[in-house]
Image (cartoon, rainbow, N blue to C red):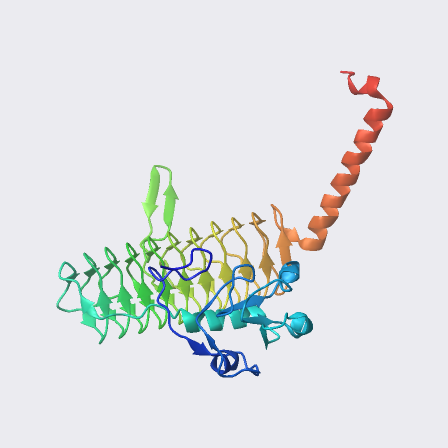
Length: 355
């Protein structure tokens, strides 16, 4: 039975090992003082034991290092001298990256078992690569192509003509239409990709739908969170670049173009035809108006309402969003005015009650 104080419950997460310290340290380019010492798993500093690898990345938790019982700790060179006796130091300038790589060694991603569930419905014109796993009640449409080694979860619907690259994982109850998807893509449960964009012409008598004739084109190594929706383009494609990570409950409108390695956090919404550069970070619940440009490496704060272009490398906050320095100046000014007002009322309490 798995230890409930440690990550990686074996009922849910496959485990490998034990692994030699030399092999573990080699993943982050570190040296190992005891290369043949064996480790069986990973765990936080507070609960790790002598056979576990732990990590320290945040200085706030440095106080836990002295008391840890972990057999090895991944940490920055600044903390190497503070490792307690009996604990091996795996020293790297990027401890969190090291934790990601070493955790994946002990708990690798789920691999397809291959095979098609007897209740799946697959059009005879679909192309299914070798080693593909297709779950119960999944539907694969005519002309769809599923790359080798991919996993299609139960109750998922892959529409006609959709292309999914190799080694991708499409979780349960996803619907995909009008989409070309790259290799190594992960799409989490309930996501909706390729449906009509929100496009219509307004007349005196009502709305006239505008045909949405574009596609959704998703690059390699993309992750799309649960219940996220990505509309297909109208007259051009909606494009999600390589390595983009989109959190749960995000809305991406038609014709949006997101550059490589950008991140969009939960409940954010991007309106149609907005161009987002590479390595952009958009925080939770931010809203972007349509037809905007967000430059490379820009940052948009949580709950911001973006109504104008955001220059490359800039940080914008607030609603309406503005450069971070201007936003904080306004916050400080308002705080000073409020403080001054309270002091005035305290000095003249009778005037505060005047009509």
